[in-house]
Image 1: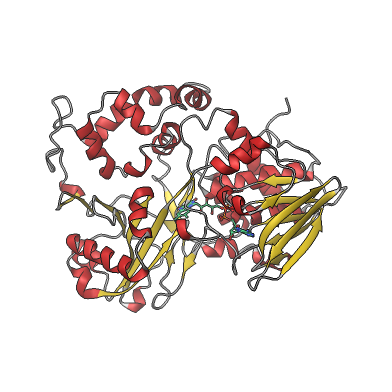
Image 2: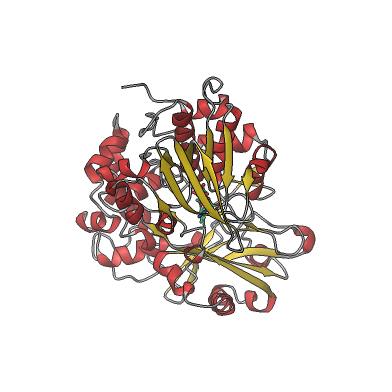
Length: 483
Ligand SMILES: Cc1cc2nc3c(=O)[nH]c(=O)nc-3n(C[C@H](O)[C@H](O)[C@H](O)COP(=O)(O)OP(=O)(O)OC[C@H]3O[C@@H](n4cnc5c(N)ncnc54)[C@H](O)[C@@H]3O)c2cc1C
């Protein structure tokens, strides 16, 4: 077997050698995957045409700039883990974007359960009565969770731990494993809101565990001028090769090439012929696309990669009361209210305005569904009512609110892919990433290790660009999964 390619090396140094047989590659989607692949292929001497349905670059990198002054809100990606080496390379070395820490823990934030708020700094196992059984009563929730995870922690420390973890535990949901480990129902009711687990309980244990164990949220940064500046940094190289407002409807595969059909904003159809087509749109959206030549196993993945719901509701206030009155500068208040999580985002503030913005509600799955059914004004009103239960000042200082529901975003298709039990080890995952003939697939669903992260999308882009450049067919290069 060929040795795995070094994803960071390829991203940094470019695809190996100039193209001896330059290809014309149509890339569907100008999110971070499409942009990364486009840049690598173009710099290696190939011709790229990017078709993007929206009127902007970035996809699920989406910075809202409708607040006062220079304030902004990240509706999509906002936190960049320093352990994500590919993303760090693009942000720092390639594009030189200024960043600053995005702290997730502030002891001045609250845990709000059953109608009562307790500062994290004051939180004890007795703060809320969940009627825990003896053995769990009086124990810090973090200890209960850690004890339950001990077998996975031990396995992860062994050589080849990641592969063995997947093999042994892929069949578990997080809930199934907690129950099997003897964690009581009352304890699960407590751990859910405190560690933001409720939206995760029925999904892959291994995927959740890896994020938790590797403390992916422990050392984060944000891009000072907004995450959209990362996508826009590709513009000088790629905007002229990009058709915006072009919604791809179908891909015809022929023995010697592809023809990609797209529709503009007023319904006019157009086509472009090319040698290869790299699809980077979320799989769930491919249900609306006609693609020739895909086999039943590939269609099975397109039907079954699960995309989660999520929304963010931003609010602008006439003064930053969270800092002035509570000493909160960052971090998250967790609640069992419909708003779920309040994020005091350090990103997007502009002290010159005297104002501030926060994420009044960031929720996933069922919690987000409760907002999907409301119209915009009802969403804002309901979220403000909840927020004022924790922070009464919110009501009198509220100026403006705006929400984005990713499940209702025609070109977003939800927050991103979530593994369910049995999906990491079976042929399912291999079929997700597998190219078919001249149609290639790169998106954040196409990386196992950093799925649903910008890192995963970049990794998938590098692998696919490498394969196209190397003239591979129906396969991708082996790559180190921990890149
Ligand atoms: C709320 C939220 C928070 C997140 N937070 C973080 C975070 O903090 N850190 C992090 O690393 N990641 C985060 N992510 C995940 C990250 O945003 C994604 O993993 C990454 O942006 C995916 O990039 P992509 O190129 O694979 O897909 P996308 O960004 O979805 O790009 C696909 C592109 O295809 C376009 N498209 C769709 N349909 C068509 C069509 N028919 N024709 C043409 N074009 C089409 C779309 O408009 C889009 O531009 C978050 C995502 C969301 C939604």
